Length: 292
Image 1 (cartoon, rainbow, N blue to C red):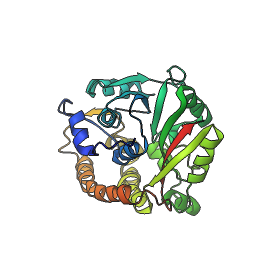
Image 2: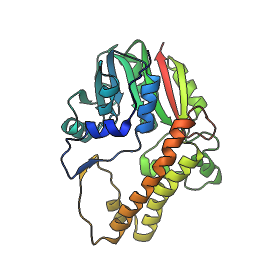
Image 3: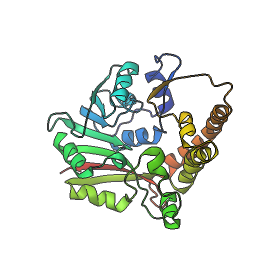
Image 4: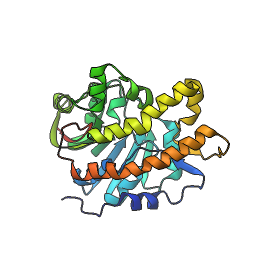
């Protein structure tokens, strides 16, 4: 039975994190498309669900609202992220720090989730082996995966031109630029999963906006003031106490720029809402597979 609970990410998000101490924030990418696809594609009413790579818990903490009778778990390699997920969470999610091995019993979960994580994992075959181990028979596995090798994506085009090929590795830690829609599907079939459904996200315009608003400004900043000095304007923390930088020219520019970039959220939402079945130029695939 499909999850029919009304989808309102912003309302749920504010409810989940309304008790966070003032002066703290948890940085995140736009989790809304991932959560929407989970709600639409994962049809479970009970059992156990694990969010692998849960980070500070922004997406994970929203899951109990949409899956109220499912036990929700979260794990991440960052002990700092797990610390703050517990600290700022609702208490409805059970968190654990994991290493290369997923520290859960075999055949324990009905569903595993993996949102923008696979592209960071060095040993993908071992990771898939571990997910198969902890999933029950016919267990479901949902993933969102950037596919930078997909023809006619921005990253693919830059690679063909031989420029800025390493930007996603440098700024967001992606180590699998070879992923395409086709080889991702083949990968899961090879490792004992059946593909049930697929959706797509982040077509060419979204990729262009991400480069223009996020990665290219970082490159320009490094050219202007140097890489070492530019580091202080990058927010690499899971949770950071807000500080005042009223006399810092570059921090003022950064703050204004981030506010301007929020306007692009409308474009992201339209792309995620109305074009999910169009794979052409899509830089991300949403995949639902079942353990054989």
